[in-house]
Length: 366
Ligand SMILES: N[C@@H](CCC(=O)N[C@@H](CS)C(=O)NCC(=O)O)C(=O)O
Image (cartoon, rainbow, N blue to C red; front, side):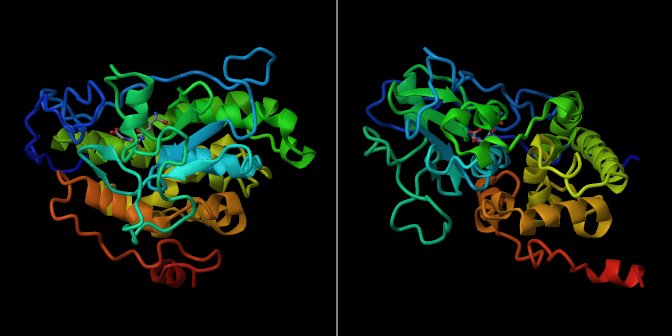
């Protein structure tokens, strides 16, 4: 399927080596503007996600550098972010609420990156949206200050999720794929049996989950960003078509599966990683990232059913989903896509009830 070819849609910002933020930290600079999602020098117009820099692991093994201890690690997230959302879901599924505390940043990401909400912010609902409670971070206003505290010469991006060790004052990891796997098993020795029994990456499904992770990450989780951040018509079309081909593949899988979860009768990593993109799809990606060949509610009945079951029937999914953060973040943090920062009112509702359908679907099934 090909859409009509057009010319360059977005004029990229000019790269500046600017001092974006001044604090006592010696090197609070970044080589490019934070909002240059596509390097303006890259003529392909393709969004290329950088690799996460901190890749340490919490371990239950004796003598580990990052031992599994209650209250030792602090998790920084944004409710808007699909990668951070993975960690909130798994934290709840595994009963880690008393073991790994968290702080959610304000939904707006400006040129200084994520910031902590203050008492003045009345527009950011949800649990733990506020200042950084970690000792020594009292004056921190932005997430980036943690990265510079850990490494004054840090040159990467200041991303959520960030898992921080409050004893060694180090970042354990800023890679959600690793953080969720630490949560699956490394705290099991200090968890009650019912949470030890939650197995999100079961041995008999590991090969299948890994195989699906590969294409679902590239074409769906990251595919929405590659469509939405593209700065050429060609890059957008290539990625949006591949995204919908992958959604068709998920639809076929769910249509022919026993369900109600991706791999059967138990929630697994497959559900966690797919959900955080699909739950944002109709409410943001369809219009903001122009992923509009179909929407989920009218175009993908099996995915829609799977999604609503997770949202309404599994608290770790529904209770960690904050549509206010999701909608405002994307639409008000990407001026190159939406210069006036107007957040569309619809779709209403953000997610339908389990037994509700859009009018067109209801009429067609009569
Ligand atoms: N690979 C990382 C990606 C995390 C990521 O890109 N997070 C975004 C928010 S959705 C972020 O914090 N971006 C800030 C920036 O790039 O400046 C992961 O899965 O943890």
